[in-house]
Amino acid sequence: MLPAGGLPLRCGWLVSITPAKIRELVASLPGAEEGAHHGHPDFRLRKKIFATLSEAEDRAALRLTQLEARALASRQPAVFRLVSDREPYAYISVQLDAVAEDEFADLLEEAWKLRGAG
Image (cartoon, rainbow, N blue to C red):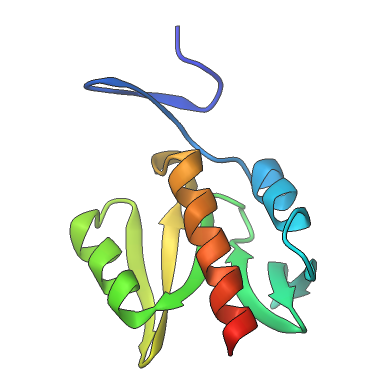
């Protein structure tokens, strides 16, 4: 039996992230708040977007460094898709049912930190 939100892997289970868990993670980041952008949820720090959810809430976009975004999209194109690539930052789209919760949490925190820095 699969764990909730889980997908089988060769060496264990992938526990994918849910929109509810994303909101919980954002709520734990100082100064972060949820808003709306073009009809879908977004997450901001000081009124600047660092992450969004798609209208269907099956994908999320994260603002990362251009190098990290390109590396993720190259390494796992079924999970990460480069959607905006403007130096020095880029946005990647993440397939939520295909990414591990802990990996997404780390990337979300990185996006929040980067937005705080500039």
